[in-house]
Length: 319
Ligand SMILES: Nc1nc2c(c(=O)[nH]1)N[C@H]1C(S)=C(S)[C@@H](COP(=O)(O)O)O[C@H]1N2
Ligand SMILES: [Mo]
Image (tube, rainbow, N blue to C red):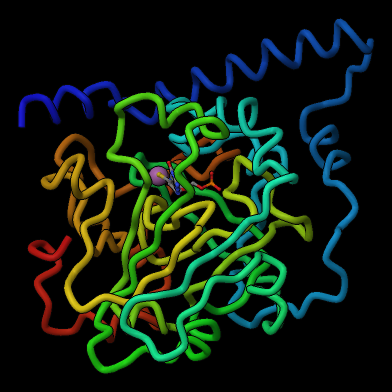
């Protein structure tokens, strides 16, 4: 236990310090860029100009989208959590530029308690599904949030194709394990590979998305290319990146974060302003790009769509 505490003790204790450290570093890098190019574009203009041409065309705009304005592409793609590429927020964007290696096929295995298991190349996996754009919030357990125009399709569509049987009560997800491509896996910060899980009804909820892009682009390495989960009413760590396996199981799967800190990270991890993380409050959050903090909403504001799944459950116990 002490050993685990020490490992988690390496994580930033305050998201405020953490974000300002990141901003200072960005400012320094911007200063260097200005020195190199002589350009004095304000940050906001620079980032508006830096959204590349969309690679996905004619996406359906989802009615599930929020009206909140989107976090700039620049922030979404440079302020990340992806421990396979380092534990600080800036390192995934620097370390995942060549991820995933395009010369290796990306294969995803669908297995466990289902009638139609299979192993698919990435293109074959996503081909049957209709891609949409859905603007969803992502709320990190560390107290920051973003609004991201995701590209993806409902996980439910893939689950229906796999035909889970009556023993399938949960879905377990696994990230790639490849320390050559993911240098962070050489360090003992988590029990690799990263895993996550959802209860079957959560996995089938129409808000749950398998994402293959954002801002009309294919996902960049730092955001979990080529395919990742987005579960907008749960803390960000449930939204597992760079998935290689989706498995239907009978008993509750242990996630990498549950193993690392069972008192800090529960299976459900629904965004809840009334249940604090043992080391920090969850009542307020900093929307990246905004100065003042805002109040966190229960289920990250998606209560109407998801609260019914938890009626009768003590959300302090099932945190
Ligand atoms: N495999 C893997 N998935 C992961 C993580 C990780 O470290 N490894 N970090 C999680 C956390 S804590 C958050 S907040 C989100 C961040 O997603 P983003 O960087 O695309 O905003 O990814 C989640 N998925
Ligand atoms: Mo997070």
